Length: 254
Ligand SMILES: NC(=O)c1ccc[n+]([C@@H]2O[C@H](COP(=O)([O-])OP(=O)(O)OC[C@H]3O[C@@H](n4cnc5c(N)ncnc54)[C@H](O)[C@@H]3O)[C@@H](O)[C@H]2O)c1
Image 1 (cartoon, rainbow, N blue to C red):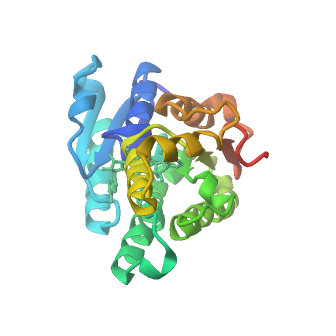
Image 2: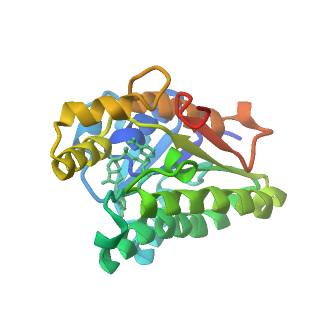
Image 3: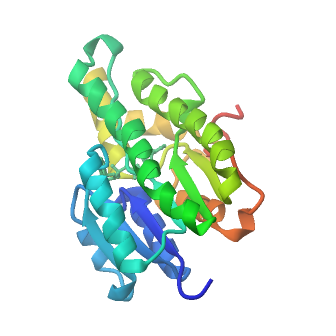
Protein backbone atom coordinates (compact mmCIF):
# COMPACT_ATOMS: atom_id res chain seq x y z
CA UNK A 1 0.00 0.00 0.00
CA UNK A 2 1.28 3.48 -0.87
CA UNK A 3 0.78 6.53 1.35
CA UNK A 4 -0.41 6.84 4.89
CA UNK A 5 -2.90 4.53 6.56
CA UNK A 6 -6.19 6.04 7.71
CA UNK A 7 -7.98 5.66 11.05
CA UNK A 8 -11.50 6.84 11.84
CA UNK A 9 -11.98 7.41 15.59
CA UNK A 10 -15.25 8.06 17.40
CA UNK A 11 -15.16 9.99 20.67
CA UNK A 12 -11.80 11.45 19.64
CA UNK A 13 -12.30 14.93 21.11
CA UNK A 14 -11.26 13.96 24.64
CA UNK A 15 -10.34 11.12 27.00
CA UNK A 16 -9.25 7.75 25.62
CA UNK A 17 -10.31 8.69 22.06
CA UNK A 18 -8.13 11.79 22.05
CA UNK A 19 -5.14 9.81 23.37
CA UNK A 20 -5.70 7.25 20.62
CA UNK A 21 -5.92 9.95 17.93
CA UNK A 22 -2.55 11.29 19.03
CA UNK A 23 -0.88 7.87 19.01
CA UNK A 24 -2.17 7.12 15.51
CA UNK A 25 -0.95 10.52 14.26
CA UNK A 26 2.43 9.99 15.94
CA UNK A 27 2.69 6.68 14.10
CA UNK A 28 2.08 8.17 10.67
CA UNK A 29 -1.66 7.64 10.24
CA UNK A 30 -4.14 10.12 8.84
CA UNK A 31 -6.96 10.45 11.34
CA UNK A 32 -10.63 11.36 11.10
CA UNK A 33 -12.04 12.36 14.48
CA UNK A 34 -15.78 12.08 15.06
CA UNK A 35 -17.43 13.58 18.12
CA UNK A 36 -20.42 15.58 19.31
CA UNK A 37 -18.14 18.09 21.07
CA UNK A 38 -15.40 20.26 19.58
CA UNK A 39 -11.87 18.91 19.88
CA UNK A 40 -10.29 22.14 21.09
CA UNK A 41 -7.78 20.39 23.33
CA UNK A 42 -6.67 18.26 20.47
CA UNK A 43 -5.91 21.08 18.03
CA UNK A 44 -3.44 22.57 20.53
CA UNK A 45 -1.08 19.70 19.84
CA UNK A 46 1.45 19.90 17.12
CA UNK A 47 0.41 17.64 14.31
CA UNK A 48 0.30 18.44 10.61
CA UNK A 49 -3.16 19.89 9.94
CA UNK A 50 -3.32 17.97 6.66
CA UNK A 51 -3.20 14.72 8.59
CA UNK A 52 -6.48 15.01 10.50
CA UNK A 53 -10.05 16.19 10.15
CA UNK A 54 -12.82 16.71 12.68
CA UNK A 55 -16.34 15.73 11.76
CA UNK A 56 -19.15 16.64 14.11
CA UNK A 57 -21.16 13.44 14.38
CA UNK A 58 -23.59 11.86 16.80
CA UNK A 59 -22.87 8.17 16.26
CA UNK A 60 -26.40 7.20 17.28
CA UNK A 61 -27.80 8.94 14.17
CA UNK A 62 -27.46 7.00 10.94
CA UNK A 63 -27.52 10.00 8.57
CA UNK A 64 -24.69 11.65 10.52
CA UNK A 65 -22.62 8.46 10.57
CA UNK A 66 -23.12 7.99 6.81
CA UNK A 67 -22.02 11.56 6.18
CA UNK A 68 -18.96 11.28 8.47
CA UNK A 69 -17.78 8.05 6.83
CA UNK A 70 -18.25 9.56 3.33
CA UNK A 71 -16.36 12.72 4.34
CA UNK A 72 -13.48 10.64 5.68
CA UNK A 73 -13.32 8.55 2.51
CA UNK A 74 -13.50 11.63 0.24
CA UNK A 75 -10.71 13.31 2.21
CA UNK A 76 -8.30 10.38 2.65
CA UNK A 77 -9.35 7.79 0.02
CA UNK A 78 -9.37 4.72 2.27
CA UNK A 79 -10.15 3.54 5.82
CA UNK A 80 -7.77 1.02 7.40
CA UNK A 81 -8.77 1.26 11.05
CA UNK A 82 -12.08 1.93 12.80
CA UNK A 83 -11.92 2.76 16.51
CA UNK A 84 -15.34 2.73 18.16
CA UNK A 85 -14.40 4.60 21.32
CA UNK A 86 -17.30 7.01 21.93
CA UNK A 87 -19.58 5.91 24.72
CA UNK A 88 -21.72 7.10 27.60
CA UNK A 89 -22.05 5.76 31.12
CA UNK A 90 -25.03 5.63 33.43
CA UNK A 91 -24.54 4.96 37.13
CA UNK A 92 -27.86 4.56 38.94
CA UNK A 93 -29.92 2.02 40.86
CA UNK A 94 -31.86 0.06 38.23
CA UNK A 95 -35.31 1.30 39.30
CA UNK A 96 -34.24 4.94 38.83
CA UNK A 97 -33.19 4.54 35.19
CA UNK A 98 -35.79 6.09 32.88
CA UNK A 99 -36.71 4.55 29.56
CA UNK A 100 -35.21 7.58 27.79
CA UNK A 101 -31.90 7.05 29.64
CA UNK A 102 -32.00 3.36 28.77
CA UNK A 103 -32.52 4.18 25.08
CA UNK A 104 -29.71 6.76 25.02
CA UNK A 105 -27.11 4.41 26.56
CA UNK A 106 -28.07 1.54 24.26
CA UNK A 107 -28.35 3.82 21.20
CA UNK A 108 -24.89 5.31 21.71
CA UNK A 109 -22.89 2.35 23.05
CA UNK A 110 -24.35 -0.46 20.95
CA UNK A 111 -26.22 1.49 18.27
CA UNK A 112 -23.29 3.81 17.51
CA UNK A 113 -20.86 0.88 17.30
CA UNK A 114 -23.29 -0.93 15.00
CA UNK A 115 -23.82 2.09 12.70
CA UNK A 116 -20.10 2.83 12.37
CA UNK A 117 -19.30 -0.78 11.51
CA UNK A 118 -22.23 -1.00 9.07
CA UNK A 119 -21.00 2.03 7.11
CA UNK A 120 -17.24 1.42 7.26
CA UNK A 121 -17.26 -2.30 6.45
CA UNK A 122 -18.20 -1.91 2.74
CA UNK A 123 -15.03 0.18 2.28
CA UNK A 124 -12.87 -2.32 4.17
CA UNK A 125 -14.38 -5.23 2.23
CA UNK A 126 -13.40 -3.59 -1.07
CA UNK A 127 -9.86 -3.02 0.26
CA UNK A 128 -9.83 -6.61 1.59
CA UNK A 129 -8.12 -5.38 4.72
CA UNK A 130 -9.06 -3.55 7.90
CA UNK A 131 -8.97 -3.55 11.68
CA UNK A 132 -11.89 -2.68 13.94
CA UNK A 133 -11.46 -2.07 17.66
CA UNK A 134 -14.54 -1.71 19.84
CA UNK A 135 -14.59 -0.24 23.34
CA UNK A 136 -15.85 -2.61 25.99
CA UNK A 137 -15.05 -2.35 29.72
CA UNK A 138 -14.42 -4.38 32.87
CA UNK A 139 -18.13 -3.67 33.45
CA UNK A 140 -18.77 -6.20 30.67
CA UNK A 141 -16.88 -8.84 32.70
CA UNK A 142 -17.69 -8.23 36.38
CA UNK A 143 -20.88 -7.25 38.19
CA UNK A 144 -20.37 -3.56 38.97
CA UNK A 145 -23.01 -2.17 41.34
CA UNK A 146 -25.22 0.57 39.81
CA UNK A 147 -23.48 0.01 36.43
CA UNK A 148 -25.83 -2.80 35.33
CA UNK A 149 -27.18 -1.15 32.15
CA UNK A 150 -23.76 0.18 31.16
CA UNK A 151 -22.28 -3.28 31.79
CA UNK A 152 -24.99 -4.87 29.64
CA UNK A 153 -24.00 -2.65 26.69
CA UNK A 154 -20.31 -3.48 27.18
CA UNK A 155 -21.00 -7.23 27.47
CA UNK A 156 -23.03 -6.86 24.28
CA UNK A 157 -20.05 -5.25 22.55
CA UNK A 158 -17.83 -8.21 23.50
CA UNK A 159 -20.35 -10.67 21.99
CA UNK A 160 -20.78 -8.44 18.92
CA UNK A 161 -17.00 -8.40 18.45
CA UNK A 162 -16.65 -12.18 18.56
CA UNK A 163 -19.33 -12.83 15.94
CA UNK A 164 -18.11 -10.07 13.62
CA UNK A 165 -14.55 -11.40 13.79
CA UNK A 166 -15.80 -14.59 12.10
CA UNK A 167 -18.21 -12.83 9.74
CA UNK A 168 -15.54 -10.44 8.43
CA UNK A 169 -12.52 -12.78 8.43
CA UNK A 170 -13.01 -13.81 4.76
CA UNK A 171 -12.36 -10.16 3.84
CA UNK A 172 -9.12 -9.79 5.80
CA UNK A 173 -10.83 -7.66 8.45
CA UNK A 174 -9.87 -8.22 12.10
CA UNK A 175 -12.30 -7.28 14.90
CA UNK A 176 -11.27 -7.00 18.54
CA UNK A 177 -12.30 -5.12 21.67
CA UNK A 178 -10.55 -3.54 24.62
CA UNK A 179 -11.80 -3.67 28.22
CA UNK A 180 -10.20 -0.98 30.36
CA UNK A 181 -10.37 -0.77 34.14
CA UNK A 182 -10.69 2.74 35.59
CA UNK A 183 -9.22 5.43 33.36
CA UNK A 184 -8.71 9.01 34.52
CA UNK A 185 -11.09 10.85 32.18
CA UNK A 186 -14.03 13.23 32.50
CA UNK A 187 -16.39 10.25 32.28
CA UNK A 188 -14.90 8.53 35.34
CA UNK A 189 -14.55 11.76 37.32
CA UNK A 190 -18.25 12.55 36.72
CA UNK A 191 -19.18 8.99 37.67
CA UNK A 192 -17.23 9.24 40.97
CA UNK A 193 -18.68 12.70 41.78
CA UNK A 194 -22.20 11.35 41.23
CA UNK A 195 -21.57 8.34 43.46
CA UNK A 196 -20.03 10.51 46.20
CA UNK A 197 -23.11 12.75 46.17
CA UNK A 198 -25.53 9.83 46.16
CA UNK A 199 -23.77 8.05 49.04
CA UNK A 200 -23.06 11.21 51.05
CA UNK A 201 -19.31 10.61 50.97
CA UNK A 202 -16.35 12.63 49.76
CA UNK A 203 -15.02 12.43 46.20
CA UNK A 204 -11.62 11.36 47.58
CA UNK A 205 -13.14 8.45 49.58
CA UNK A 206 -14.97 7.04 46.57
CA UNK A 207 -11.91 7.61 44.37
CA UNK A 208 -9.70 5.63 46.78
CA UNK A 209 -12.08 2.66 46.64
CA UNK A 210 -12.19 2.80 42.87
CA UNK A 211 -8.39 2.98 42.66
CA UNK A 212 -8.09 -0.11 44.87
CA UNK A 213 -9.86 -2.19 42.19
CA UNK A 214 -6.61 -2.02 40.20
CA UNK A 215 -3.61 -4.07 41.40
CA UNK A 216 -1.34 -1.00 41.25
CA UNK A 217 -3.87 1.01 43.31
CA UNK A 218 -4.25 3.76 40.71
CA UNK A 219 -6.29 4.69 37.65
CA UNK A 220 -4.88 4.36 34.14
CA UNK A 221 -3.86 7.35 32.07
CA UNK A 222 -5.82 7.46 28.78
CA UNK A 223 -2.54 6.86 26.91
CA UNK A 224 -2.10 3.47 28.61
CA UNK A 225 -5.36 2.29 27.02
CA UNK A 226 -4.58 3.95 23.69
CA UNK A 227 -1.30 2.00 23.43
CA UNK A 228 -3.22 -1.29 23.72
CA UNK A 229 -5.67 -0.08 21.08
CA UNK A 230 -2.80 0.77 18.77
CA UNK A 231 -1.31 -2.70 19.18
CA UNK A 232 -4.60 -4.34 18.17
CA UNK A 233 -4.83 -2.13 15.06
CA UNK A 234 -1.24 -2.70 14.04
CA UNK A 235 0.21 -5.36 11.74
CA UNK A 236 1.95 -6.79 14.80
CA UNK A 237 -1.49 -8.11 15.84
CA UNK A 238 -2.06 -9.81 12.45
CA UNK A 239 -3.10 -13.11 14.11
CA UNK A 240 -5.38 -11.49 16.69
CA UNK A 241 -9.09 -11.40 15.94
CA UNK A 242 -12.24 -12.01 18.00
CA UNK A 243 -10.51 -11.27 21.27
CA UNK A 244 -11.17 -8.88 24.13
CA UNK A 245 -8.01 -7.39 25.59
CA UNK A 246 -8.36 -6.57 29.29
CA UNK A 247 -6.32 -3.48 30.16
CA UNK A 248 -7.56 -3.47 33.74
CA UNK A 249 -4.44 -3.86 35.90
CA UNK A 250 -5.59 -7.20 37.25
CA UNK A 251 -9.15 -6.23 38.26
CA UNK A 252 -10.82 -9.21 36.60
CA UNK A 253 -7.97 -11.55 37.55
CA UNK A 254 -8.62 -11.11 41.28
N1 LIG B 1 -12.91 6.11 31.74
C1 LIG B 1 -13.04 4.85 32.12
O1 LIG B 1 -12.75 4.51 33.27
C2 LIG B 1 -13.51 3.80 31.15
C3 LIG B 1 -13.39 2.46 31.53
C4 LIG B 1 -13.81 1.46 30.65
C5 LIG B 1 -14.34 1.81 29.42
N2 LIG B 1 -14.46 3.13 29.07
C6 LIG B 1 -15.02 3.42 27.75
O2 LIG B 1 -14.07 4.14 26.98
C7 LIG B 1 -14.73 4.99 26.05
C8 LIG B 1 -14.21 6.41 26.17
O3 LIG B 1 -14.48 6.87 27.46
P1 LIG B 1 -13.72 8.10 28.17
O4 LIG B 1 -13.48 7.68 29.56
O5 LIG B 1 -12.63 8.59 27.31
O6 LIG B 1 -14.96 9.11 28.21
P2 LIG B 1 -15.10 10.66 27.86
O7 LIG B 1 -16.49 11.00 28.28
O8 LIG B 1 -13.97 11.44 28.41
O9 LIG B 1 -15.00 10.65 26.28
C9 LIG B 1 -16.03 10.10 25.50
C10 LIG B 1 -16.13 10.87 24.22
O10 LIG B 1 -17.21 10.32 23.45
C11 LIG B 1 -17.97 11.39 22.93
N3 LIG B 1 -19.34 10.96 22.68
C12 LIG B 1 -20.32 10.66 23.59
N4 LIG B 1 -21.47 10.38 22.96
C13 LIG B 1 -21.24 10.50 21.63
C14 LIG B 1 -22.04 10.34 20.48
N5 LIG B 1 -23.34 10.02 20.58
N6 LIG B 1 -21.48 10.55 19.27
C15 LIG B 1 -20.17 10.89 19.17
N7 LIG B 1 -19.36 11.05 20.22
C16 LIG B 1 -19.88 10.86 21.45
C17 LIG B 1 -17.91 12.46 24.02
O11 LIG B 1 -18.26 13.73 23.53
C18 LIG B 1 -16.46 12.36 24.46
O12 LIG B 1 -15.60 13.17 23.70
C19 LIG B 1 -16.23 4.84 26.35
O13 LIG B 1 -16.79 3.91 25.45
C20 LIG B 1 -16.24 4.29 27.77
O14 LIG B 1 -17.42 3.56 28.02
C21 LIG B 1 -14.04 4.13 29.90
